Figure 1 (cartoon, helix red, strand yellow):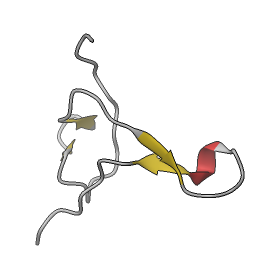
Figure 2: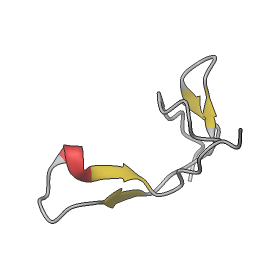
Figure 3: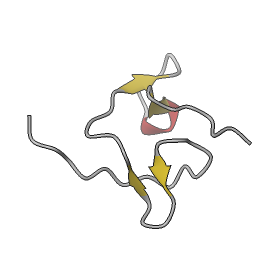
Length: 52
């Protein structure tokens, strides 16, 4: 698999490079958080809150 550039604006995630709004990971998995199959119910499974 080729490395991908992943846009990210979740600035409280430790993998987000806030200077360029990109994810530092090469790939991510997106999980469904609800029973409906809609975009608003999905999130990155790699999310880790930045330590303060």
